[in-house]
Length: 104
Image (cartoon, rainbow, N blue to C red; front, side, top):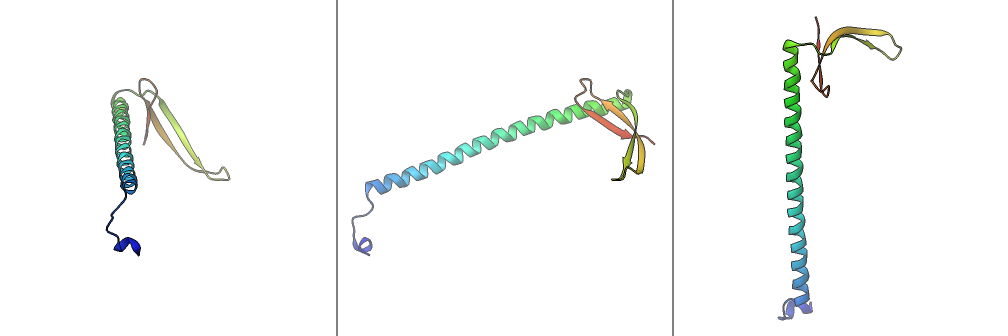
């Protein structure tokens, strides 16, 4: 209660500590913003690389079958055949990406 009646105000130490806390909060916010911008840029580059590679593989489906035709067999837990289908496999030039398409 004595503080409300006093007209002395805040001490220099209290003001400096408050400024230090505000400065640290602003610095943390700036660091987080910079880090998130870098992460977003990296993710965007990876997405662009993936879609470019996917487009190259999809272009292969029109011209060349690079992987061959395989039969995929689906079984249950008791190894009973549930379903099977044939698929054509297409691969990129460097074999880093594959695409499959069900054959009729």
